[in-house]
Image 1 (cartoon, helix red, strand yellow):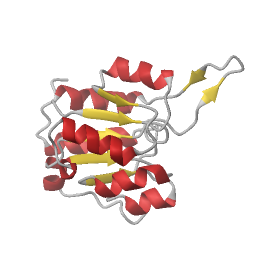
Image 2 (cartoon, helix red, strand yellow):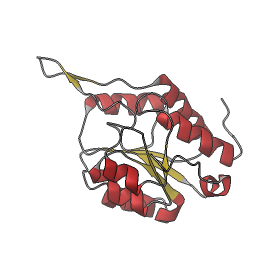
Image 3 (tube, helix red, strand yellow):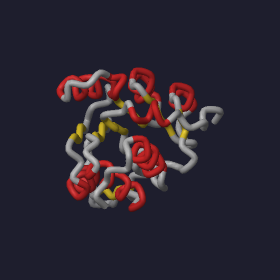
Image 4 (spheres, one colour):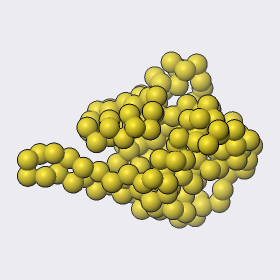
Length: 172
C-alpha cells in the first residue's frame, strides 16, 4: 500500500464527478443471500453522510456496479444518488458514457474501485482511488489508497478530501 500519500488539494479540487463501485467499496464486499433468495448488504452510515454532504455541496455522484442489486437500489434511493448504473461490468465504458453525458472529461472524474474490472476506470479517471483490501491490480492502478477499509468509512474519507478541496460548501 505504497500509494497512501494524499493527493494535493489542487488535484482533489479538479474533480467534478465522484463515481464508485459498490461491492467492496461501499460495502465490505459481502453479499448476504437468504434461503428465499433475498439479498442484504451492509452500508456504512459514515459513508452515507459523506455522500449526502457531497451531494448537498453540488458534486455529482455515481455508483457503477457490475451486478444489479435491489439492496443497492434501495440505498441509492435513500441517499438520492443521481446516477446509479448497475449490471455494467465494463466500468470504463460506463464511466466514459456518464462523463460525456455530463459534459466532463475523464480527467475531471474520480473513480473508486477494488477489483480487476475496475482497473481500466481507475487508470482513466483523473483520480483513481482504492481501498487497503482491494485486489493487487486495483491497488496498483490507483493514485490513492484510503486509510479506512471498504464499507467502514473509506468512501467518507474520500468525501472529506473532496469537501475540503471544494471549500466544504455542504449545507449539512
